[in-house]
Length: 438
Image (cartoon, rainbow, N blue to C red):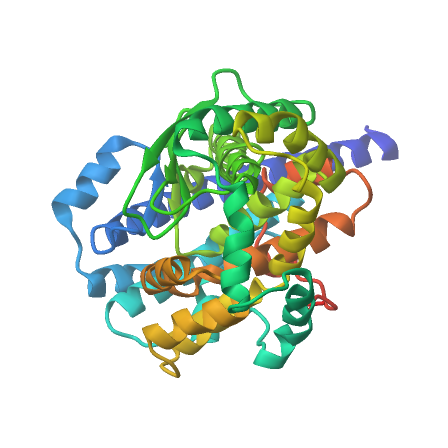
């Protein structure tokens, strides 16, 4: 006859067996649902050329999507059915955090799929409704008065005749990278960003990216993730590129930004865990706020301001054949202009809500965002193409910064965990986060 302890141990062992069997069944069910999600994203991509930002899953799935080309109504119907199945597959409360996050991520990404399909079918959403439905976040609203104090400070810092935007543009001309120096400057910036990132984040062997210089784009830089830990990074040379953009683009598109983000998702979630949903990246989804937010905040993580200024004076200004005496003043001005970043969101909100036209949106960007006219017009083209996506850059950065900085002084380790997880924007939200110009 077994003792009481033996019976207790036996019962505990049975519970463990049942729990493991239940967990395996839950994982198998989620894997099946995740595969259906991937196939739906690929199907939407047949109707929207910008939708599938990256895919490195089974090639036959992409081929099937191209061959079948499901109608938008059929995709919408399947997405609704899948959403119900995902909701029914909610893991038990005892499940570990990553399992919980996976379920929440898949459910919310799927809602964004349904929203994008509805938009492609003609549904009209206001700016904030759209950003909430697609990116799981809403940017604060600003009026002209919110930017007045920053513009007033810039008036003092950039005296002279003409409009403020003209004076700002003239001031920046001394910091343009000559076209024949772009490649060496970017290579130096990339090497430094890679070196600093690899000191803190373990990356898989063989990861790398190539850089191309392109024209006729609505964006300044883009990372096209290829899978197998490789990226193609394109830099748009339509307009002059200033020396500060070298570190910005090298970090944002490369290390520790988009390239590292995609590499770690592929390594830690797709390959190590077998979570097939991370073989595809639908651009118009909550994933993008995390991607853009970490890419922008990653610039500050890799290069805190004093270290950045010293590096640029010592390395990048000479590589660009620019004089470094004005570097400190240059960044004082840029720091103020950065406080106007939400003016871009406001231009997009008003334009997409039908309150102003394209010309008025460009005028707003000139006056309140200090965009030169060509850059303002390029930005309006970006807004027309990507719509409420603009919130992901500044609001995303602010949300990521608040989340990471609230968790202690080791920013690198928290950053690495965030870009290796399926965490949603709404889980980053900080109640007191209300970004406004200072």
